[in-house]
Amino acid sequence: MAKNIEFTDAQKEAIKAAVQKAETRTSGEIVPYFVAASDDYEETNLRAALLFILIALGTLGSLSFSWNLPFAITPMEVVLFTLAMGAVGYGLSRFVSPFRKMLIPKDLMHAKVQQRASSAFLSEEVFLTEKRTGIVILVSNFERMVEVLGDSGINEKVNKADWQQVVELIIAGIKNGDPAKGIIDGVERCGELLVEAGVDKPADNPNELSDDIRLGQ
Image (cartoon, rainbow, N blue to C red):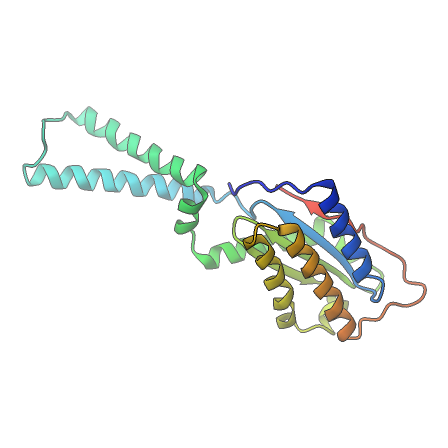
């Protein structure tokens, strides 16, 4: 899948500190969640294998029809060649991320990231905050996509379009080779948006969710 990114202990602590700081002025509970990819896209690997098989058969058929084959080949050799080409296609898609990414429609990647964000929202029990003010910031490295998913208490006050500022900051950090800084910048902006939207922090508001970054596969 995508190149694995490891966060140092110092980076994890810096992200945690950013979450704690952002939550000092708002009742919003921010949950940063980083995954290498939102799906294994196995169907794309199989599609790549089929594509290479068709290319192999098409090439052999064209050369044979035009009498340009350099030597005679048997049906068994045709089968072995096409299977080998299929294996090459599968391997390229499975292990070469840029190649696989070219075969995946952007809409499909976006849908997978949204599904992973929804899954994280449930698995981390973000919906259990007292005032329904939990937020998941799902960062998916392979797709270079970020999904911000807020609970009902957040969505009543913050326009979904405003989260694009958070998304852009995090993606910029990933592109610059510093995903930790991107996440920190995104978390800080998330906190600012919550304050601007009037998601205030009552005096008795406890810290209901862990401030640590969650790391998925």
